Image (cartoon, one colour):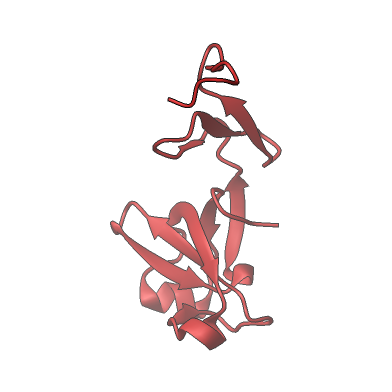
Length: 115
């Protein structure tokens, strides 16, 4: 199953070819329920799910029905960090996100110090 962070390729269909997006590769940046958000989606939706793919060749993102995309890989080595959080999440080759600490030793304050 294709999900956030995966590298994908747009399948060649009549619709994707006429739109000039067939064969493009990109990264899945997110997903949405088109019935709620009203985004324009390439393909026929079999469920209320569309995937947002950022295509570097176009420098933009497009919404696709999942069956118009094929998995290239799970982007192993991709890292996510959040400012102010001493953790990072790294992608494994099988698509899992592994949480890791970004500090060598956790800072511990004595129970009686509040500052």
